[in-house]
Image (tube, rainbow, N blue to C red; front, side):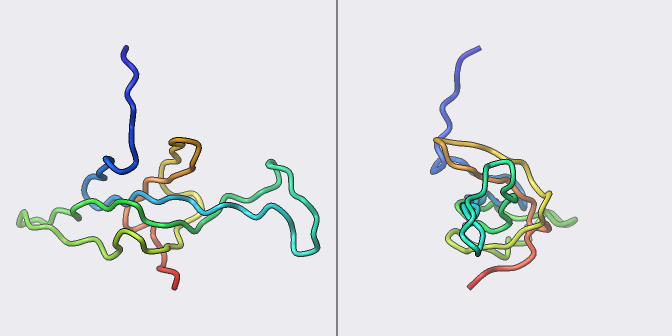
Length: 103
C-alpha cells in the first residue's frame, strides 16, 4: 500500500462537513500549576480551515454552510473525527456539531 501525503490546503470536506484546526489546550491552571497531558481537557474551540459545499436538499439544491474559513467556532465536546496532520490537531465536524462562532 502506497503512503498518501495529505496537505491541509488541498483537503475539501464533503457535504455539510467542516474541517477545524483545534486550539491549543491550557498548559497550566489559573493558579499556575502545570498540567500533564493526561489531565488536559480536549479543547472545544478551533479555527475553520475548510468547509464543504453544504447539505443537499430533497430537491437537489444545496444549503450553504453557515461558517466560513477563518471563523473561530465552539463545537460539541465529543463531536467529529480527530485528525493529526503535520503535528497539528484537527477535527472534521458535521455542521450540526458547531454550537457557536466566537468573536
